[in-house]
Image (tube, rainbow, N blue to C red; front, side, top):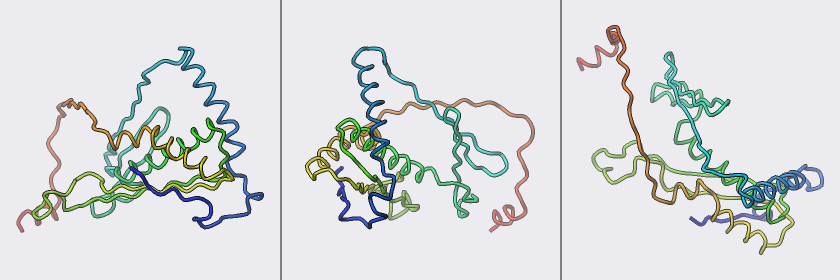
Length: 212
């Protein structure tokens, strides 16, 4: 999935290069970590696969999804037209945000490895969701986020050839770009725990709606 890579001349300047901290100093530190990690992989001291885990629990009062990943928590919510309070991004929005974050990180990794100086990296991701998908007239429209595009913008003193090499390597190595563009196999299961007590009575508004 090729998307245009914008260099400094194609984006709105922020501040003078000498005045902004930029990423160059961080990428020196990042390079040390990247090379040490690659040495560990080559030496066989860093093996895999790593097991990644995430959990989502619906809050009983609001329906907000609390996503727990290791010691971190992220809130995901729905807009009001889905009975949400908009306390956090929706799940599809989170997916696109994580994709943008992953691309940005891989730009950092590859720039550090190839010793390409960067002052700024910004990745913007856009996709579409069709709420009418599956309804009459929209049977062939995907339910999932689709027409996904991304635009990467970098500010760098590197040559155009170096930046193109950076871009091509990022596209080849970004794991979430591969996740979205390659077929996947997902296995699911369900655990049902019976609970006691009667179901809650529907509200007067819901009963009136049922009567039409």
